[in-house]
Image: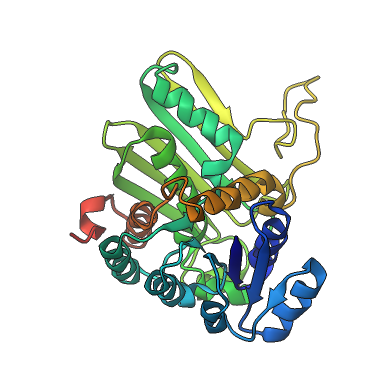
Length: 334
């Protein structure tokens, strides 16, 4: 098959390399807002390049991968829908709920194949956790503890357009909780703090946050996130049940050290960034997209899935700003 890729920045370059190595992808066409960047990467990978993302729609594609800037996600998704192309798009679908709803309406009316990039669904640990919960082996789940702890802040210029910690970072935890449990969040209470760089506060954001989630079966979820975890990149999901408890991310590379005398585990080298931690998941995610293009599967993460995770993030941001519990019904648009 012939796949196009719009956007070859950090995550786009990773996707380009992955796609170039998939047996299912016979030819790859790259485009970027900066044409020279796409051409240079294409030369390295033995791919093709076109001048602009719009030119991809005249390149005879079978499917499109979108890893461009967030503000152009809706236009590229809908252009692919209009062209009858299956499309994979990195999260978020749009910069806000209204934009996401507009895309959802067009996608669902067209019955289009759109896959949104929440890569944790393709991580073996998260997949096994989902199976353990849904099989009933853990008994009824009473508590979930999730966290995404970045080792260092992103560039200052990224923060004003990031959407904030809950929308940019914790949204992955919200999607994972929904996917693993099969339940919906009905209420949140969130807090945040700034003890690091001033540019977070200047953008109305926080560098550290936490949220208490109530799910629709009264399971309690505790979600934490920070831009300052110098020990390493730490993503975990702990699932505590009436019969048993398990954890995703609890391996020798966990960036956490025991204070107990004589305990040396975990002793491995922590993951430095998300790309290393989830490399296998990113490969599996794009392999799944080629199955979607081939018509072998339905979308493994739909625009509606992304919308639901975004509703949780919106509720958390509102809760943080107003210092009160927020029901999802307050932010949900019928």
